Structures are given as structure tokens and as C-alpha cells.
Image (cartoon, rainbow over all chains, first blue to last red; front, top):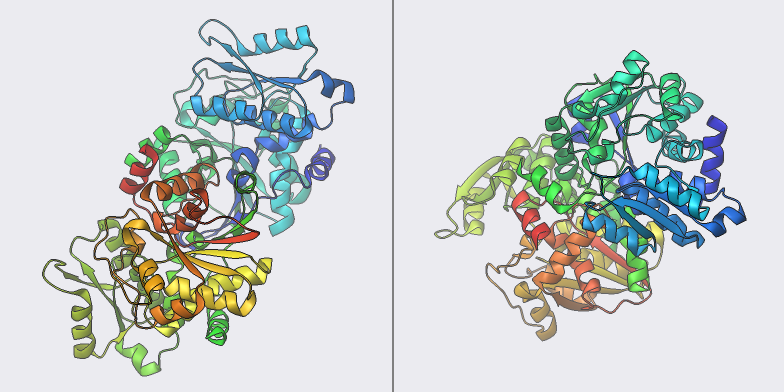
Length: 314
Length: 314
């Protein structure tokens, strides 16, 4: 799989941002170790999702591109697919719940995507997307459970190892496991002694339990502030990859996530969404004990004003 | 003066951050030109003020360092002086109004500064500072009206020209004129055809009127959200420098400042305080018509939760 991440990196050249790596003297003093942040909040569309969407869509055949692509997402993956479609002049259709935030809907529409609404109480988004896929000949670009998507997401960690060398520990947020498994594949390829630890909210600990029991668990609609991790479970492709490549999984409280977003805001002047701050939350709350050179992937920065105000007020 | 900025840069090496320069595809498309942001919100203490404080304090004699330094400020300069004092083991005294925000007071105290409170309705901060200076043999490090402070602030623009070459236009926030005159000196030294434009809030337009009439104007306690520009007027040293080196001055509305902070937050994922966003406010509101390669100095990112919530709500 590592070769596929390397190939993805070549494909992304000139299209994705090579995002900066930042550090904080205050945090290093607090933790007693060196911590490096890979700023995927500064990626195009504000999250790592651009990498996987671009890597998968750019590999479609001419005929597939002409027929268009489809996906289901109310968040960052929707915007990523829509933007890649716009860049490559490919028609995109996004299946979104009718209660999706207006701002995310608008951002996706701005990139020229067609939005198909559904009632999340009555229908399943995957079923709707599959029906449209079959009917119109669209190609499905799922949000995480696809090898080209995983390979694309792995390029963020790959860039990090290329820029700063070996790490002792890499902390990665885990929703459906695309970023986590991609990052772990890059770590094993670039810095084999690096311990890769996936971080989840306590309220959405399906992947942690799946990892520990080696049986797939799921949590439906967990009430966590980290909306990017509300995916019910790991996928058919990402679950085995997580078992094979990831060293450990840890969970953090909602309070720890809020503290981490605040630290990034006040101390590092970075806007990071709650899901994006999971790695730092694990370090600050000592869910993970720091050791040596530590990498953290800040996975995204798309946060709405209501969520930000809740965090600043708490 | 340019040689003094160059010398300041050498002094700052290894102590100040060489802050990153960022860009936004969305903004470039919107403006139709290339815009580069110098991210002084990512400087130590969260603002460019560290540069001037370090450059001036590090040049004191051994005897002066042993006696300690004093300044008056309720904002970023206070934190900058306190941090430099801590780094160099120099005693620092900061004269602050008794209504200064608790967070800024706490941050300054964390760096080990002694805080002297005064009642802004009854006393003048400069008088108090001068009295303490005379009584204790402290050296005064004023917030902007000092040649070593100006030279230090000029290093941000110097780094920008060194990294990205010539610019056609450089937009710089103006409070007391330290950052503005320092930046203009660097521009004339590095990129002589670059038009340097100082930006002020309409509500605090003293420097704009001073520039236009060549007579010093002042505005006391202007009710602008851009608290870093509430300085009543340019100084004895900065006014002549602004007249000599700066090409133009423009003002922006409170609404334009708020829009700029929001753009930086939502689109660029950067936390920038209102004063720091003045350059972008000028561009977005067309107070300055864009032309060619444009540099903007984001001067700082120290914003409290109440101000941020006001902005996100509006």
C-alpha cells in the first residue's frame, strides 16, 4: 500500500497544498517533548479530504469522468468531491441530509455540485447514492472506504515524514479510518518505529472497541462535538488496514476536545474544528503519554460560528 | 535607517520566529491579483511587538539590564517586554490601567513582570512610567516611539521581501506608526517601487489626517474594535518617518474590519485580531484598489473571546 501513497503524492503535486508544519514553544514546554502539527486545516477546502477525493477522481477513465461521480456526505468530503469535480470539469452529485448546515450546503453548491436531499429519519444515504449510481452510471467516491481515498489521505503524513524525518509517535483523528490507515501506512513506510495512535471521542469509540476486540463495532449518531467522527464505524477496507498498521487507539472526553480547540485558537492562532483537534486533546489530557518527537495531524478547520461560540464560552 | 533594520534582523535570529507567508486562492480570485500575508499573528506572544521589544532591550548595557526596564501598555507590547525580560533575566515593570482585560494582565504576569496599576480617569500612564523610571533607574522601552523599536518592527517586512521578492503594494496597520514606518523603511531598502500604504480605522484616523495635513492630529480613546490602534497619535520619531517613507494612508469602516477578521477565520483558518486585519479590510472594501503583487502584514492574533463572539455574531 505504501507505493500507492507515494503514487498519490505525485498525482497531487501542484493541486493539493503542501501544508505547513507548525510548533508551539508553550506546548513543548508543557509537554516536555517536541510536538509537530501538520496543518491540514490549511489544505484546500479546509481539510485533508481534498487529498483522497483528488487521488481517486483523477484516476477515473475518460468515460467514467464523462458520466460523473456521486458521493454521500454532509461535511468536508462533500466539498472536496465538489471542488475536484469543478477543477476537472466533472459533474458531481452529493447526497446530503435535509438537515445539513446551510453553510456546508452552500459551500458545496458554490463548487457546482448537484445536491440531492434526503430525510435521514426515513432513508439511508448509501442506498440513495447507490440507486442514483446505478441509474445514471455515476462512479461512487465514498468518503473513506476506498483504497484510492485511503492512499490520498496518507499523503499528509508522508509529507510530514519527508519534511521533518522520523517521529516517535503520530496522533491521528479517527472517524471512518481513512486518514488514520493512510497515515499509518506512511509511517510504516517512512519511520517504522513510529507508534501510530488513532484518537476518537469517548462518545464515538466504535473504532477503539473494534481495534481492541478485533470485531467491528458501531456507534450511531454519537452526540460528540467532533462532527467529523460521527461516522458509525470503520469500513470493509479501513478496518483491516487499521488492525494491520495502527499501533493503538485512545479516546478523549468532550472537555478535552474543547480545551484543545481553545489552545489552538488562543496559543497557536489556528482555527481547527473539534475533530481536527483530537490528537492534541489526547496529549493535553494525558490520554496519551508523550514520548520523544510527536507528530499530530490537525485534520481540518471547518467550524461554524455556533460551534466556535460554544467552545469559546466553555 | 535601513541598516538598522538589517542589524535588528541579525539580533533577532534564533529568538524571534521567522513567521510564515500565506496566500488564499479564493482571495486571489476575488481580488484578481496575488496577495501575500505575513503572519505576525504567529510571532512569539502572538504579535509583531516581540521584534521591537527584543531589538531594543537586547542593546541595553549590562548596567541598564541590571537595573531593569519599564513600559506602559495594556496590550501586546506589555507581553512582548515581559517575555523579553524573562528570556534575558531582566526585571520588567509594566504600567497598566486598572481596567485592562484580565487575560492580558495574566499573560503579562505569567512572564514574570511586575504590574503597576493606575486609574486611567485620574492619571496619565506616561507620567507614572516616567516617575518610576527616574526613581528606580529603569530604562523606558516605549511601545513605538523609539528608533530601536521601529527598526525591530521593520524586520517583518524585511523577511517578506527576502522570501518573496519585490511587491507592488504593501498594506500595513497603523497605530502609533512603529510597524508602519519600520515596514516602509524596509520597502524602500528592498523594493523601492513598492507603494507602502498605512491603514487605520475610520474611527481612529489621526495618522491619516496627520499624513494628509503634515500636522500632528490625535484621536483620544476612539471606539474602534481594533484596540491595537487606539493610540492617540503618531510619535515624535514615527511621525517624521511616516511622512518620509510612507506613500499613502487609507481608512476602513468597522464593518470592513469585521468582514476581514471573518474572512481570515473562515477561509484561511487564521485567528487575527481586528487591528491585525486592517490591510485585508482595505482590500476587501476597496479602500485600496488592488494592483500587482500585494503584501499584507497580519500584525497580531491576540483576541479575547468576547470580541471574537461579537465578530462571529455580526
